[in-house]
Image (cartoon, rainbow, N blue to C red; front, side, top):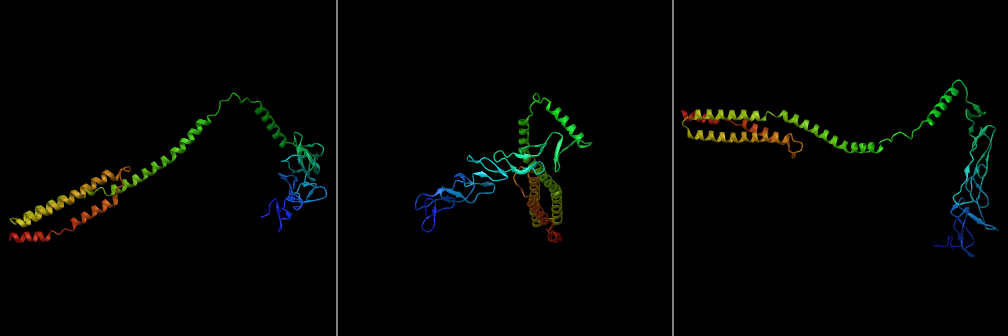
Length: 302
């Protein structure tokens, strides 16, 4: 729990980045060269004040206040730093540059801060600046230069402004409508699948009509066979009523399919459940055994 930028078992040492003697005075920050722009993480006191002993690469001096050989910069103000000279080895005389400006010592015919710039129509090579005028590159460069002159001389101030705002609105509207169109296409696909399934089972109504005709035929035969048998006739009437109910159920089922099965916006209806119910009614009619009724009627006629 040492304070005042101190450390140690007895808080008798300055923390890293500070210097001084806690027993004689406060620990001061290592300004290498500035407290808020320091290029050394530690320093040690000497007879004058202190010495920065861990300057970063590119910095030198008692307080890391100068740029080392091969670097340049202005460290006289906070925020200053040293940058590498990076003198081009083909265009410069050495890797050293001016410590403040960074200007390298260029060979004859070469310019630029780092000695990488040749005169117009020349290119820097390992042998210095060489002319680009030949039967290939020279012709292309000449044409490019002429094109540049024509472009530079073109007046573009009178051209109308591009409708970026209008194009941006169109793009946003397209992004808004895209998911709606995709949902619409998906609903159309689902509707087509439902229509295909419903068309496959669309003959339910025809089956119901046929069952009704057969039921009436059974009743007619039952009446003819029964003759004067009142009991057999009453049973036949009950059978007719039951078949009429079954027929009506099938008609209602078909109507419900026609009303709701093809409407994707209507309430969800289980077409599969309706078809299963229709099949059950058909099986119930087919499983009816009219043999005992016929035999009983024939016995009554004897």
